[in-house]
Length: 340
Ligand code: NAD
Image (cartoon, helix red, strand yellow):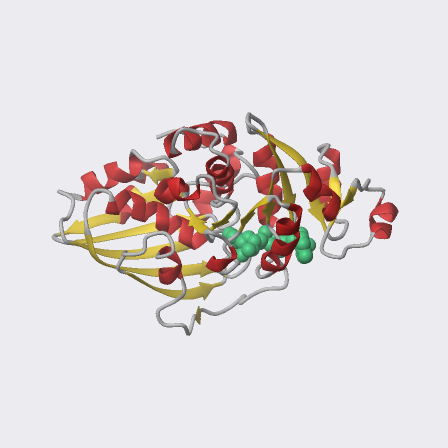
C-alpha cells in the first residue's frame, strides 16, 4: 500500500518532512502547499514537487516568480490520504476544519495544543497509540527529546522525580526577526509547559521543567537531574541504555565535541537531511550517576528532531508496519540516521 501525502506549510519543518516523505518506500509525496513564493518554493519546484496555494496566498506572485502552481490546498486535500500540517503554531488548528471536511487524516505539530488531535505522539514512546488514528499531534522538539529519553529511562529504571532545565535556542538559523542577541531570558512560567507536554505521552511521569532562552540558533540543551527509585548499576549501564536505542548519538571525549557548535559541524560534515542532527545528542562524559541520582545533558536539533517522528506517525495511522521498531528502522534507513 502506498499512502498519498500532502505537506501544508513549507517552512523549517514542512520542507524537511516533505523530503523525508519523498524517500519512503510506502509513501508518495503528492504535493506541498505554500502561501507565497520564496527561494524555498523555487527549490521545491526544482525538485519536482507539485506546489499548491495555501493560507489565502495569491497566484500572481508565483506567476511573476515563474514558479508553477498546480492548484489550491482545497484541490490538494482531495488527492491525498493524509496531510502533514506544518503551518505556524496555532494555524494548524484553523486548517483542521479543511482536512475534516475533505475526510482525510491529519498530522499536526507541537505548536498546536494537544486537543487538536486524538493523540500526542512520539515513536519510541507510544507508537501503538497512534495506530489507526485519524488525527495525531507530533509533539514539539523539546518534548520529543524528553520523551525519547523518558522511553529509555522509564522502561528500565523507575523514576521518583525528574527535573529538566531547558536551555532554549532563541531562533532558528534562518530567522532574522527573533532574539535575544544578548541576554538570557527566564521563561516566567514556573514550571514551564514542557513538563505537562511530556505528560501527554507519559501521563504518570514525575517531571518538572524550567526554561531559559539564550542567544544561539543551533540547538536546545536539556540539563537533567533524575532521581530513581531503582537506579542503574552505574553510569555505564545508563549510557548503554541510550546507546542501544535508535535516535541517540553519544559523543565520546576523543571526538572533541565540546558543545552544540561541534555537534552541528559534525552534522554538516555528515550531510544527513538538511545537514541535520535528528538524534538526541548525549556526551559520554555528560552522564553521571551518584547513588539514586543521575545527571545528564542532552542536545536537541530543533529544526529536524521531529522529522522522523512525522514519518512514523503516518506509518502508525495507516498500519503500515507491524510495530514501532519496524517503522523506525525503515524511517532511519531511508533518512540516513545510523542504527544503534
Ligand atoms: P515556519 O514559520 O518555518 O514555517 C511555517 C510555514 O507555513 C511558512 O512557510 C509559512 O509561510 C506557512 N504558512 C503560513 N500560514 C499558513 C497557512 N494558513 N497554511 C499553510 N501554511 C501557512 O514554522 P516551523 O518552524 O516550520 O513550525 C511549524 C510547526 O512546527 C509549528 O507548530 C511549530 O511549533 C512546530 N515546530 C517547530 C520547530 C522549530 O524549531 N522550528 C520544532 C518543532 C516543532
